[in-house]
Image (cartoon, rainbow, N blue to C red; front, side, top):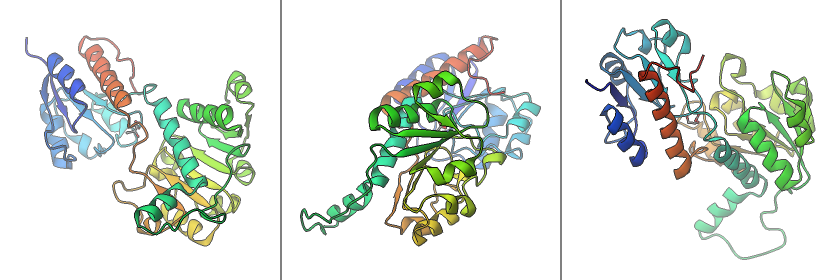
Length: 322
Ligand code: DGY
């Protein structure tokens, strides 16, 4: 019997591509170029399964082709690049890869928090430029992290894992904002307090870390008005999605000292970064690498494989997005 055809839109870890090729007829992307809308439409026309990533803009318009694809198996937890309603209307199942990237993404949120607080990006740039003149008491002094207050927006898996690191590792007090009630056990373990309003949380925190999904409700959740509610000494950390922050407003707030610093891993129009951010000394800018460890990327791929195998065996995929 012919195997289902799976089109893979980016290079995946070699071990996962090999496993995928055992189970399916695969079309890989040898040069790892991002797929254009036409390539996505062609894939949706030919393939039984489209193995997508965050760089594939699967808009309602792209998904309007009546093709052969029955499942979009996303390599990643966020599915904001897929028009879920349009996929549903076409009878296409969508799956993602939760859990396996939680700890590594939380690690990167803490890395950004520490880099921003301790001016690590500035220090590295200075040293590499040959401008370091040696140790001195007033050189590149930053902000102490120990004992400070962290505000977590979105207490899902990654938000909780970040709060755990901050509280247990860095003695931080945790305040959080979440749409639904966070369990008393989770709050108790972190000695955390849930606030009913984001506006009430902002003036109380030294660091704000974003972990909410991207959707119309969270679009520009952090805008100029919300930045103005933060302390001038505060730092904003974003490992969620670029659209949650108004990047132009953030750049202006950093330039004017409305807040002290920002650590960003995600951007509104990736891979473009707002030009004003790149010139700011108090912005730490990483290229969307939250889940980027070998083990995690392999685990994400294996999770895609599990979803595909279940789907083509006629079972409900474990990570079906409703
Ligand atoms: C995720 O898993 O959502 C990462 O940001 C890559 O898409």
